[in-house]
Image (tube, rainbow, N blue to C red):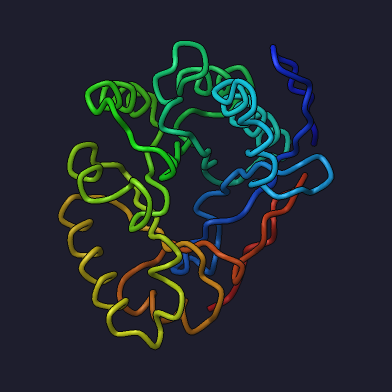
Length: 243
């Protein structure tokens, strides 16, 4: 599915791809699908985003989220929908989280199936404002996730100040964890802290069965990565794996 984004800077085409986040305790059934932007001809997210940053990026950010809601509803998505959000867009008057909860209502997608996944690429400056917007989303049943925990700006201070519902562990912590005791200790410590805070952990970038089995053995049940499915444009990837 493609959409023409017409705003004050240019007309631009993009597509929405979906990648599963699976629950390995439920035979790999999807816990959620993350919506990812791609070019109309399959160009990478990085190239699309770099192009979009030459204009009103908050408008583009919201257009991607809102279009993902429409496509997910048309595909009858069977799980939660995870939507990427830049930190600058969280409380934007026109393009903030409220614009996407409104789009979900209009599309007929239940708001309690939304996950707002906050990017690590820019810091959250206004913690007080973010807490207010997060609270409003949670009142509607949506969840708040921090992406790539362990890299970028989504670190311990953000965890302390904003306590998300979900933390996604950066793939740098996951790569080769089956043979790396230091990574195992760090992830085990994260599991302990998040358990005490009632924060759900998702491991990103899982690519091998050894990484998967190690993560499962130390207590992580939700995972995402090429092992379970690559992002697919226009359809939901198969993710019913047997472990």
